[in-house]
Image (cartoon, rainbow, N blue to C red; front, side, top):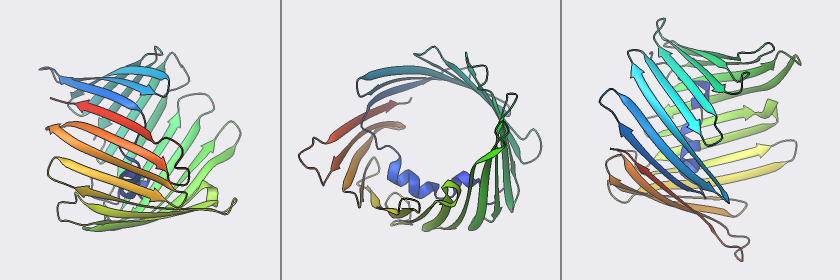
Length: 276
C-alpha cells in the first residue's frame, strides 16, 4: 500500500483513541490461542450491566486474504473476508451476517501517494452507499465523506475534515452531522517513545448551542504500566490503569465519576486480555 494521506476515518483518530479507547464500565475477559496451521481463536465474555454476552472469533490468513468468523450467544455468525493487493494499491472487504440475509456489505479501498478513496455498499436491492475521499500527504490531508440512501434518495451524511500530523503532535478539525457540528482536537506526545501524551478536544453542536470541552492525558509509569485520565466541562472524570502482565496480555481497570454529583457511586470496569 502507498504512504499517502490515509483514510478519512483516520482524521482525528489518534486524539479520539486516547480519550475513549480502553475506557469502559463493564467486565470483560478475552483469551486468544494460535494453532500451527495459522488459525487465531479468540473467546470473549462480557458483562454489561445485568446482561451477559459471549462470542468466539476465529481468524485465518492465507496469502493476501484474511478470513474472520465471529459467533455470538445470539446465534449470529458474522463473516468478514479481506483481500489486499487484488489490484495494485487496493483492498477489498466483504462481510455478511447469518441469519440476516440483508446484512451483506462490500467495501473497496484505493490508496495512492496523494489520495485515498473508499466506496462501500450494502448488498441488497436498494443499498446504502458510502463514499470517502482524502487528498494530501501523511503530514497534511483534507477529506470528505458522504452517505446516500438509494431507497429514499436522500443523503444520510456528509462530513469534511482536515488533519495535520507531525512527529510529536497532530491536530484535526471535522465538520460533521451534515454541517451541524464541529470538532477540533490536538494531541501532543511528551516523549520520544510516544508513550506519554496530552490531548484536548472541543466539540460544538450548532442546533442545540451545546459545547463540550474534554482534556486528557496518557502517562507511562514504566515499560509495562500506563495510566490515563480525562475530564470534560460537564464534570465527567474518567481514569484507567493498564498493566502488561506478560507480553501482549493486558489487565485494565477503569472508572468514571460525575464530579457534579459526588453522591452517586462511581462506575468501575475491568478488562483482562490474554494472548500467548
